[in-house]
Amino acid sequence: MLTSIFRTLLLLLLFSSAQAQAASVDTIDVLNKPYANWVTLDATIEAVKAATVSAQTSGRIVKLNYDVNDIVPEGAALLEITSKEQGAELASFEADLAKAKALNVEAQAQYQRYKELFPQGAISQGAMDEATANAKATAQAVSAAKARVIKASESLKYTVVSAPFSGVVTERFVELGETVSPGQALLSGFSASQMRAITQVPQRYINQLKNAPEFIVRLSDGRELTSRDLTIFSFADPISHSYQVRINLPENEANLQPGTWAKASFKNGEREIIQLPLSALLTMNELSSVYLKQGDGFVLVQVRVTEPLNGEVEVLSGLKSGDTVAVDAYQVLLSKKQ
Image (tube, rainbow, N blue to C red; front, side, top):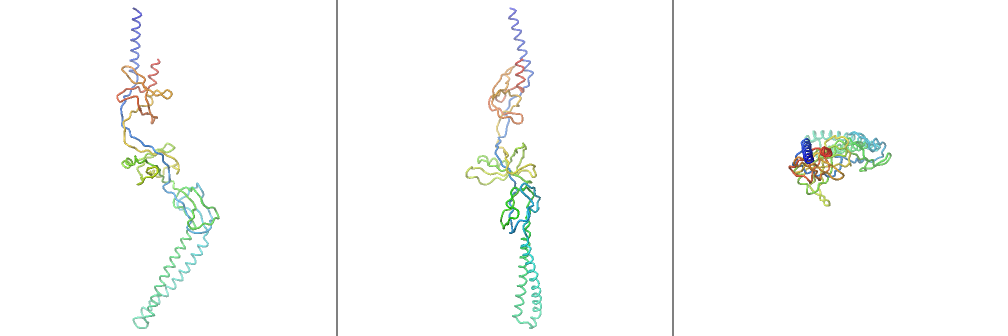
């Protein structure tokens, strides 16, 4: 009889202890929450401004001021080409211009004299016509000489090759002392002030992207850059059936290098998901479980979850909306062991 009473008292004590432990454990209600469907694609960083500088005149390279990986300010002299031939040509054309101007002054003066004498009958019609034609010809000769001087001046300027924008030299195609000709590539470079990400968007997502044009670009160092400045190509690649998209990144963003990889993500609608904090998970090897509250106690229930993100996981299966689970699974485990 006493043994039965002791057993009853022990069960009551255990039941009361379990109720007290269950009451002291913090819980969280499982609810479905709207969550954006993110599509993540590989992207490549490239410079918006990138160019190859070519020779615009012929000559021999006498000075190389910059090499690969050098930072070049806008307008700086990249290299210099021999200018003796261009200088001599300019001097010759300037002399021709001076001669043409002198002849034109004489022809215009003669035309004015003949124009005053012709009504008086002192000048014949043939002489007047000759003076008029000569004045027009010398005036046109001056214009032609000016054009040759301008051309020779530009050719002389081309002997000093300047940087079209500030940036970094990426490739050098010539050597000091090498003879170059017009159109020959000299140096290549890019501007670091403006970058963009290039990605390929599958055909099934393109309409959604056009309706909500926004990307989040995640860089290798963990930075996230948001951009709405997109250029979506109006044609698809015939092999991959995807559309190329250019994502313009914020200007003067530090440490962006062309050719590096990035991840570009955009929203593709929404769905209902269940999210739990990492503390609610009890992980053993590859199995994940939570403590589901049933009545006054907790039952260990296996769940399937995604990789953690920002301290939370998405529950793919094992729970439903309306369930209640323990916020700290290891607290429940410890109380059960005690």
